[in-house]
Each structure stands twice: as structure tokens, then as C-alpha cells.
Amino acid sequence: MTQDVALAIMKTGRNVFLTGAPGAGKTYVVNQYTTYLKHEGVDVAITAPTGIAASHIGGVTLQSFFGTGIKDNLSQYDIENLTEKKYLWDHIKNLKVLVIDEVSMLSPELFQSIDQILKTFKFNQEPFGGIQVILVGDFFQLPPIGSAQKSERFIFQTELWNELDLGMCYLNSSYRHEDETLLAILNEIREGTVSETSMEHFRSRYRKEPTTMGATVSLTRLYTHNRDVDDINRQALADLDTPLKIFEAHTTGAQKWIERIFGSALVIPRLELKEGALVFFIKNNYNKGYINGTLGTVTGFDTFGTPIVTTYDGKDIKADREEWVFEDNDGRPKATIKQVPLRLAWAITIHKSQGMTLDAAEIDLSQAFEPGQGYVALSRIKSLDGLKLMGLNTEALQVDQSVLDADQNMRAHSDELYQITQSQTDGDMEQAIQHHLARVGGSAKSLGTQSTRKKSFLGSKEYFARGMTVAEVAEERGLTKNTVWGHLHDIVDDDPEFDITHLQPNADIINAVEQAVATIQKRGNSDDFNQHNEVKLKPIFEELGEEVDYEDIKCALLFLE
Image (cartoon, rainbow, N blue to C red; front, side):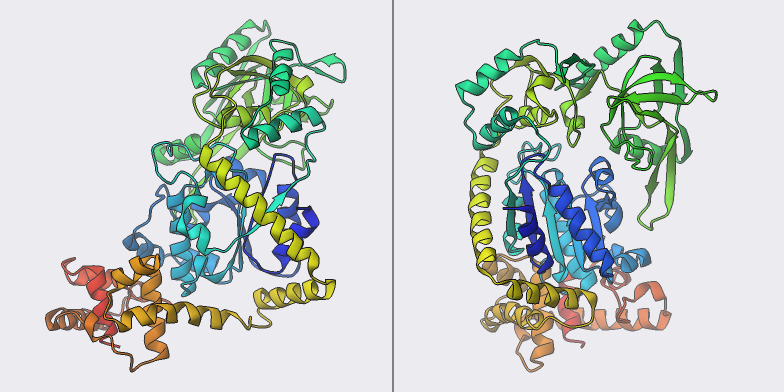
């Protein structure tokens, strides 16, 4: 699919998965869409699962935006706690479009938790609370850390992925790799069949020094294990006979929050540099002319000791200290780190290289231990001329079989969507775009939203009519219990005479819940009430001594309304 068609599909309001090989222009298309939305005054959130990925797109982490903290799997109790956060209501109340970049790194648990948060805050049981979702990424990249033993490693393996009814936009052009040979090799890896011709290309680069435009260049070494990276960087720095300069990070806040920043970003507490050191920038600063991954050499220090870095294109950049901030669930800064935004770049791990573009690299895949490592490492460089291959094992060029299978399916659906889109007239597309813009801009309501929602809850109504419980309906329909609870409220609102007496708890529970509600209302603590001035579940649960579970409380409340 071409970039312009993918952009047009997004503008019609459809949920989209935007994918393609490295350099296909995914970030460009997303930037085009978000710029368009902002120009039209539409509230859009630009997010990613990690701080590094978020910095690439000028966004924030999902955890920060939705206040989830370190948890991926949120309980109903956790979500009730989030509803007490005013800043989250401010974030979400006008949110119309959610962009999540680098979704290969997004755990299925957090993916589903964000869905539940939006359903709760939007009072809408459609997937992600009914807002438009743009997922961006490439599942051939490395999966979430710690997912190796899970049955669901990737979000495309969840039922929620299917519920979103995503339009597959598979970009099939490359704008990063000028080397057609390297691009062909990467595509072979994506197809799970690396040819003998490609293997010959690898052999031709074995321990061969990289060249760019005919000149030998400094290079970054990509290794699979941290111990190799640390050893190489230490030794290379020691080999320089220039004076050592040490940069200690300036920190504020509690140590546990400071450690959280160090754990999630590339910034380090103590940076040792010398003139002649090979370094890369670890933050984006477009005004100064560098991004995360920009390589260069320390060519000196100014009168204040600030490093001067000369990049490969000959630009001299003063690497002033940058700031990293950790915010709590209320959006308040809990810790800050100020440090020179550099790291030694003679060697880095393949995991940390994800998202970078390198002119030249020495890559050792002899100890590759996870499918996808070879693909990620090779897709960092611009051409085979920039590769010095130190080793290759059988694991290195393999990719996850589930990703291969899913990718074929995504390609087919993308081709089908492309043909459908091309068959529409310009007038039809423009009408769809204006219809979506009016809906998310608040000037008009989508004609189909209410009917779609009603169709969804009516699907559950027939099961309740048979005397089934919420849990049984959820299992029968393949939905979450929270979704079915939302359906039940919609059913009762739509048809107050509908018989749900089979869900009625015993009289003692109803009376206890009624008394708890009365007590809380009399107390009048504003934190105990939601945006509709209804008593929240958590205060009732606590008022009852945590002896009545949430399901019984919810049922009791139905019979008090």
C-alpha cells in the first residue's frame, strides 16, 4: 500500500494497523496524520510503550499518559483507583484519536488494560471506548522483554486485536535503505526464506571493514549480550591517550524514582568521555540537529567542559545536558535527571539499537539467542557496504513463526483494502473524511455510532433473557466481563421492564449495599463520587469491610436504581 492511500484511510476514521519494513515511511505517515488532526483541532494522543520509542515520535509513554505505573495487567480495583485521578479525566475526556507506536514492544496485558481504562472513562463499551486507534509498528522487531514463555507474546494474538476491526495498511516502499541488495535480504528474512545468494553476501562482509562513499569510517558494534558491549566500550576508551572527563548525573527526587528513569532510558549515572571517543546521542533535539542514534566523535570540550561532537556529516554539536523526568500517576514530577545526552558507541546491544539508523556497524550474531535479533541488527544499517559481520549462528536470521503467519495474513488484507479504496470515487472518500472530521471535531455526530453500540448490547440481551449470568454471557460471546456489564446497563436503560431478577443477590447484600451508599452520600466526600455524581464502587467495597465482592455490589446496585 502507498503512503497516500494509508493516510486517506486514517482520515476516514477507521482503526488502522500501519506496518511495513524499516524505512517504509511509517513515522512519516503518522506525522502527516497527527499534524492534520492538530490543525483541525482534534485531540490526539501520541504514545509508545517505552521512553526511547516515545522520544522518537515526540510523544509520551502509554504508562505516563494513562497513569498505569509499572503494572501491565490492571484489575478492576486498579481502574477504579484511576477514576479518582482528575488529571486522567482531563487527558481522556476530549480524546478522539490514540496513536501507539512500536506496538511490537507492547505487551498484550497493557494493551488490554488501556482498552479497559478507555471504556471506563469514556462510558462506552466499544473497543478502546469508541475512539479511533492507530497502531504502528513491525512485529519482525523484537517482542516485549520477558514475553518468551507466554502463550500471547504479541498483541495480534489477543481477541481485542480482532475486536478493533483494524484496517491493515502495509507500506511496501522503502525510503531508508538505498541499497537494494540489503533491502532484498531483509525482505527474505521477513518471508522466512534466506537464499544462498544472500548468504554469499553475508560471507562477503565477514570481518570486512565498512566503507561509506569509498572511505573507511568509524563504526558501532552491535552485540547480543551486555557483557560484550561493556567490555568493548571500556577497553576502547582506555586505549585513547587523551585526558578523561567524567560527567556525573544531576538528580532530584527519591532514589527509587531516579532508578526508574535510569531503568527505562539510555541515560547513565556516570559518563566517562575522552577526546576521540565514539559516541551516539540518546535523545531527540531537532533544533540542535541530532536524534536518538546520531553517531559522532568527541572532538573536544568547550571552556565549560561541555563535549563537542562532530557527526558523520561534519556538523559540530555542543552536547549540553538534557533533562529526563519521571512523573507519578497524578502527572507530578517525582524525579529528574540532568545529564549529557551521550553514550559510548563503540558497542551497544541489539535491543538498545532498535529504532536507530546507523551509517556503519560491526555486528556479531554468533550468540544470537532470540528470533528477530538478526533482522533488527541488519535493519539498522543503510547499506551492506556499512556492515562488518563478525559471526552468524542459525538462530540469527530466524523470525517467530507466529509473526510469519500473521504477516502473510496482514499483507493479504492490506492488498484487499487497497483495492477497495482505489475503487471508491474521490467524492466518496472526501465525504467519508469530512464525516469523520465532523464527528471527532464535535460539530456533528456519527450516524452509525449509536446503532453500532445498540447492536452490540442487543447481542448480549438475548443471552440474559435465557437466564445467563454476566460471566456466562462474557464466555459465550468471547467478551470481557467489563464489556458485558456495560451491555447490561445499556439494556436496562433501553428497556427498563427487561427481566433480570435471576441476577438479583440475596436481600442481605442488597440492604447492606443500600446502607453503604446512604452512608457515603451523607458523608459527602467528593472523592467518593464519579463524574455523574454516582457513588464509586471502591468506597462501597471499603464501607462493607471488603467482605462483599465487586460483582455482588454491581448486581445490588442494579436493583437500587
